[in-house]
Length: 86
Image (cartoon, helix red, strand yellow):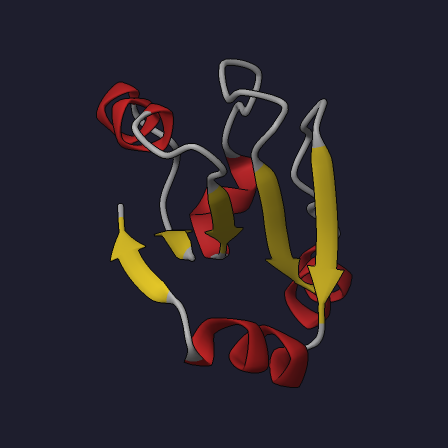
């Protein structure tokens, strides 16, 4: 499975990468939490680090599924994945 990592605001070229994937999974950190996810396909699953969301108060605003993961859960998820840093 491919997970896209976003650590800054979402750009149009990032959307192009996400659209190439059948079932995109997007992990957002830092400035990525401030992105406008409206153009992202709702079938995309967005993951955010629970601790960072609690600390900043920023939750990704997205029509699709947003999952908050603890650090350990996120690491377990990513260990066997193919990662693409946007």
